[in-house]
Amino acid sequence: MVVTKHSRPLVVGGEQIEGPYPVYLQGHVQHGFGRGSKELGIPTANLPEDEVHRACKNLKTGVYFGWAQVNDGPVYDMVMSLGWNPYYKNEKLSGEVHICHEFDHDFYGEDLRVVVLGYIRPERDYSSVDALIYDINVDITVAKNSMSRSAYQKFKLSPFFRS
Image (cartoon, rainbow, N blue to C red; front, side, top):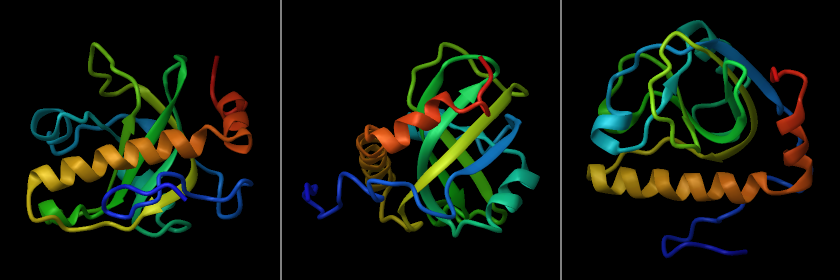
């Protein structure tokens, strides 16, 4: 097993996808707390509150990986934070999807489709914003490595995504 200096595995999940996955989420991108791009340098697309609550019926809070699509565009790797964001002391649940692609515009109100395929880690509180940013970047690496396996790749072509 490959690990970081903080002993985090850089690949998670089994070779085959097991329940409760896949979990399909969809909705129009909502305005969030405005921290992803501005404070963290890691933009997120926020799921509607009803989809977040629906997801929490099958998933515990934490960080997940899978695929995401905006409108009819390409399908990209994604990392999703589902929960309370302890560092920021959120008072409501959020589903914040970081799509692993650099977009040149915001897409508030656009259709977001997400297929969640695995769990990376639980939510954590952090001593600093730098520690949070570091962990999110490790999450992105873990997601990309985990998604490279064939069982996960096939979901990129799911009929759930529009082309």
